[in-house]
Image (cartoon, rainbow over all chains, first blue to last red; front, side):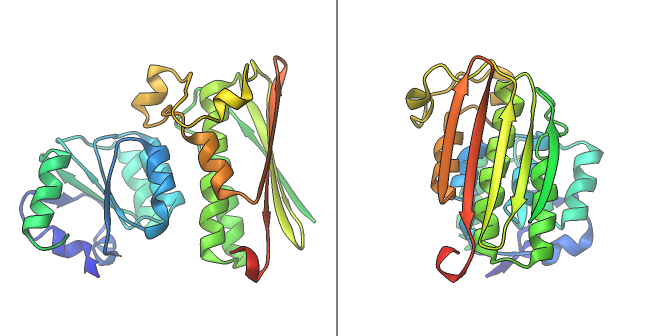
Length: 112
Length: 141
């Protein structure tokens, strides 16, 4: 089991939600830009790696109680979405890496 | 029996999932099994998104009974032309905008069916009714 704060030791990642979301835990990641596929595979409470910066991403993540969303390729969420994530205890992580690079990076660091 | 009704607005992604969020909050108050809650919320969110994406608008009625929970989604059309085809995973008539929001991959109805204990879908040009049932109790988590 890993904590979100382990992820952001690398300066490639930045948590843009409140500090308390750093304590969220995970042991699986799921990478996808199709939110129905996320719903289908959401039972293991994975971290979601995606480049879909829509309010629907936050909606699905909070509906499934996911611990975090890593938003790739430098995409950002609006303030309203970040506030919603804070209320729901969802961590949002920003990175300029692509989704594939993110997976390779997590693998190289032994997180996957 | 407790009953709740919520409006669902077509094409409004900002408010999409609002009814399902309220459902989740209520299910938490009921302290139901987490796995069952996830099944119910997943199905509800998919169904709500379907109304947002595909219809001219509609509403949902959540019913909380002693032994089961029933979700009824209604919309005012234009209806599903071929239900069997719509149930096929991968088939979609969703717009590009729906796809930009992460949906429209043709998985919604099959996800709902897999999450629920019973699902009944009826449709005409006047509208679509989707009934989803979840049984409560230890054997149904």
